[in-house]
Length: 397
Image 1 (cartoon, rainbow, N blue to C red):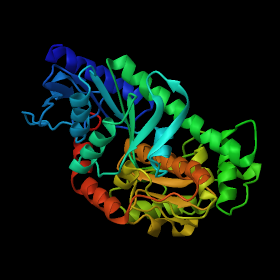
Image 2 (cartoon, one colour):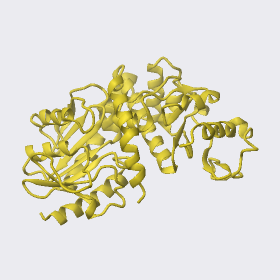
Image 3 (cartoon, rainbow, N blue to C red):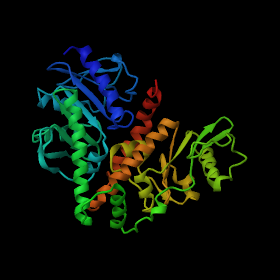
Image 4 (spheres, rainbow, N blue to C red):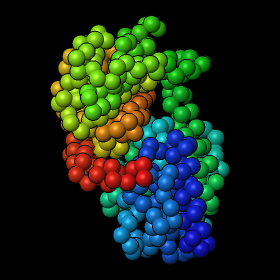
């Protein structure tokens, strides 16, 4: 395959990866083998929806070296390990898909599949944890690849690596992995609650019971009152859940909307880099908010993008609780997810939803542990000091 052809395939696959929901923003990566010594991979921190051939980086399989000013994905070492071990593999994708992320946080070394899958085999192995982009993670993948019989590997507290002889096979492996992981979770739920049918809301309610909380009444499973908002030149704009907009300058009306506008105003006054607030009340976030406990990172992207801890508080304490984090959980009423713009806030909300799902589903398997204190703090510091600036400079171009 020519370098040009490989880069074009990577570009198309990167867009497909975003559209499929297997990754959020740039948290995931794609590569294609060029020849026996090189592969083409997505760049670090670029919007996959707008990259061109000049942004795709040619990397050496042997030592991960590259030329040029554009940095390749930090996970290039993981990709190189796959290509070194499997000469017939020509496509690799690294995803942060939800159900595989649940399995990644359980501390398991593998999961057994009920029926042998042509792409997944009969057992999916989990690589031991290593910080993103490190030699430790690369070595963990290398150790597991030697034992794996399928086209997927789960990375503990991180996501998954899926590969194939071409793009279609790699994507099929990722989608089949997601189905298998969901089946593994549902099977555990049905076993514990002794049921024959599955409903996602029932699983969430059962998880609360396992945590020592009561089931949430049907009427309380819908958030109450809160809205989204955006900073403006004259104050801020509130967006009601039905899409109706209120007046843009709310400085003089900040005590309206049952006091909610006052909270938004206080957030904007205290945190000058926050320009957009989303009230996230998706199923897993809303269910978790009824637990009344703080949320810690169970997957890497949460530690990086959202924070090392998200506090669960009453609305009046939301402003103070946002210090050091991009979100705050409102007891029994979802979460405020914040960002420099709507895209950033939406990314925080998506990752919050996934991490809440990881925790609630993981509860079915016993107490699950978050990423260690030192590792999650290191990731957060690196993200704030380096990676977030890179994202801000390149996202949306």
